[in-house]
Image (cartoon, rainbow, N blue to C red):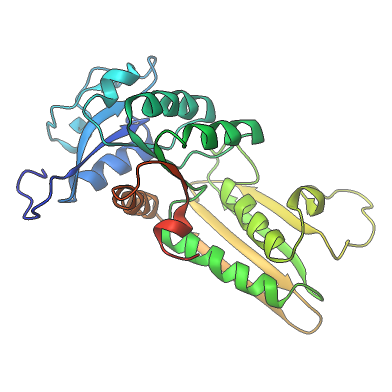
Length: 276
């Protein structure tokens, strides 16, 4: 696939974790469509029915890359690993990446503070881009929210509403939480102290310093996020809607290209997109 590339440089060799899953397959398909990156490894859990099969078989194409549960074997030919799996698996993969000098793009969400500290420590040994959402559009939206929050720090109630498909296991979404963090930071608040995740019964009047969250789950919604700044006499809504996971895959490839110039350190999509 990349052998016919007209670029002078060697393609970046990329491994994909969770290769049999929906996001894994989207990443593999995106890699197949590029000239500057090539699929070099495919990982999945030992229980996956895809183990041993060709990673691009679902596209009707033979890549010669077999899906394996052996982390070191899956990474032996890779420059970068892209991982959208579960926190425990991602940490296990990162430990091996740090040992082998393989860089990593992490799109996994749901990390605890302790796990985030572990990632930061391992990023001193290899370069990592980590973001709760790899979509270029979502990250531009985060920048817009930062601007809006600074201008509307008083007199506006802030509510974050997110909707996802019925299979999503965590709530609020990692993207919704990131939106809350960006807004709180811009306003000089701590999200841990001002977030409200549930309302039921007689709740009393709304605390003006709070940031509210609401989560909707249903059908095949890929991901919708709306932030409402509700004032007296006006309201602003900033919305991002994903209709396909393709945006996450394309953002991930931009992160892979960004890592080419970095040997160590923990980076995010604001770094990748030069939004800081």
